[in-house]
Image 1 (cartoon, rainbow, N blue to C red):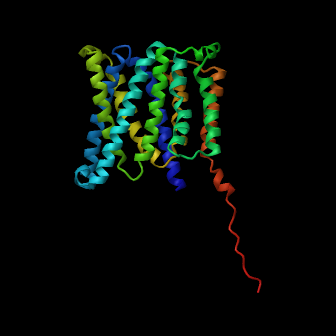
Image 2 (image 1 turned 180 degrees about the vertical axis):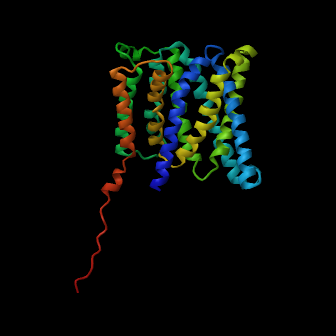
Image 3 (image 1 turned 180 degrees about the horizontal axis):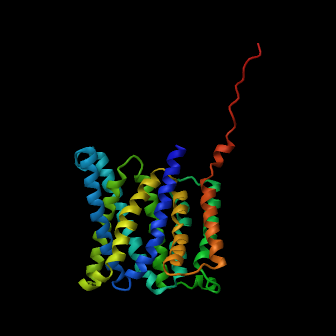
Length: 315
């Protein structure tokens, strides 16, 4: 069991690294196309990529298309999970991409990453028990996000709420919902199949928004192709599938803390790719985030277990 948890945590760590690097791709892509268009094409690439991967996996390993051979009840659960996760992710991603245009990067990063706090709070309503060590990790991660996302003088503006900030807050809520939905549906289900359905739904919702509000030109899409491919295949198809599999073996609160490393990775990616430098404040934020993750992974309950004592008769 502990081995599975470790594997799940490693998968979620890889996910956060891919997402962190995607920050650069999302910024560059927005220079050419609008937010709904970016999400529309991004999720189309994700959906096509996962459809091909799923078909290849089925034909190579199972010699059949598993979707049509599984029990009806199990298939219905996979479809329901994929659709609900897809709707949540589509709303969250489109709101994030749209809202980030008109607010500071620090405030956008802070509000979006509030899913770290929202996951345990929402979990309480569905009777998810929260360990003390997880609350401690959440608080440390929350403090680290303040250090990472705000520069000196910006903290005073945290309470000045703009309509775009409200959009980011709603986005964080839907990211939290998606994490909890995955926790519920991923157990004993085909994660690759569910992730594929999720992105088909995301693509449909995002493309509808794109057609209604933007109607991008072919040249614009061509110019944004490299960022779109990275965001679609790596950040979408690969990372979100790893999220499904990783959460299968990881508690949702711990998963949200590990995935919030995206904030740290985005800073490091900016430093490496576009020669940005980290301030001492940001370095402290990175250190606290790593501390939160390490604490969340320590099996304190194992240490508290009392050893069994064999009461043998002296007669």
